[in-house]
Image 1 (cartoon, one colour):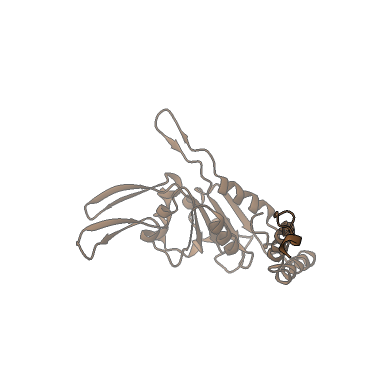
Image 2: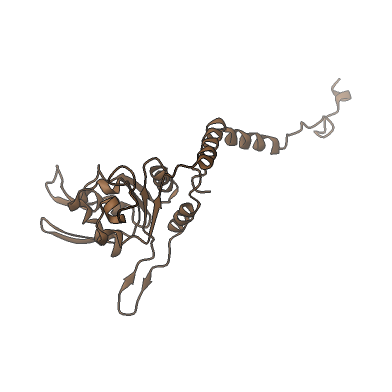
Length: 241
């Protein structure tokens, strides 16, 4: 199961499973390439386990990179030109999206990114390439990564009287590049809150119990080695005396 410690969010977990599996990249006869990776955006109130889902998916993915929007720049996500201290030559280094090629790049606090840095992701999310033309270096890097982003509302909590783009403070051109968008709201419900509290209490009380049970099962399944008797070894105790 995906993130069994997190209560609920069954549809979101199914979508994350599909993102981990991925789709089939299609190449049309005219040369056009249609991406098969799924881009998912999780939006909603704070405290609904969005960041935990991102960290869990990035940890179980064969190639997963986790970063935050506030601590990342457009150059850090795409590519940067660096200068070698020893030789003095310029080199091209890939960012988080390039390092997550054929994998998943999880970006938390997606709405906290600067507008200039956010526009660098447009090409990656649709064309899955990073085009660089800096300091005499012209190159195109592959960034065939599925983007998993999480964003918080602009006003602290989601306002249902306003549109989605007004709540999240993201342009429509960027929202249209996400294949699946989930709106997670923290609705006050006594029954759901009690079930969530029981689940959290159970997880904390039984932390490490499953691993201990697995070790006990492995030890019980082991067949003890019986010591061979004297006759089986061809040794006669009477002759020894």
